[in-house]
Image (cartoon, rainbow, N blue to C red):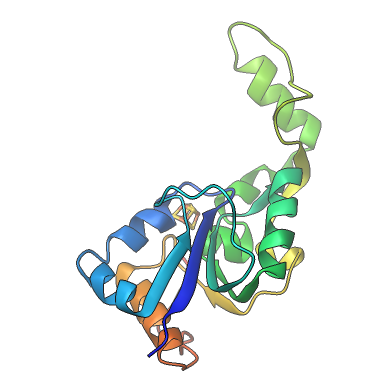
Length: 176
Ligand code: SF4
C-alpha cells in the first residue's frame, strides 16, 4: 500500500495536542508504516512541503503570521484536520477575545512587565484583533475535538484515513 504524507503544525496552541500525539507511544511505528511524516515540530524540517495528504493543525489563528501559514497549508494540503479544541473553536486563546487588542497588549507588555515597558511593533508577528478558529480562514475537512484529543482518538483518526475511510468522530470525540 502506498504511504500517505503527513504534516503537523503548531500555531496558537500550548503543544498539548502534539504531546498527545506522542502519547500514542509505540504505535507510532504502525503510523510510520502508513505515513511519511514530511513536516512537524517533532522533526527537523524548515519548509512546509508543496503537497501533503494530511495535515494536523494545532492551535487557533491569532496573528498575521498564523493567517499566512494556514492559507499556505490549505493550498498544499489535501485533508486538513483542525487538531484539538484551540483549532476547532479557538478555545483557550480566545479568552482574550472579550478584551480589546490594546487592552491585551497593555496588560502583557506594560502593566505586568517590571522593566522595558514597550509594546513591540516590529520583528514579531502582529496579533489579530481576536483569536479565531481555523475554519474562520480556511476550509477544514475534519474537526478533531479534545483538549487535547486523546492518543487513542488521534491514532484512530489517522488509521482510518490511511485505510481510505472517513473517521466517525461524532460518538468518539468531545470537547475538553
Ligand atoms: S486544545 Fe488544549 S491541549 Fe491542544 S493546544 Fe489547545 S489548550 Fe493545548
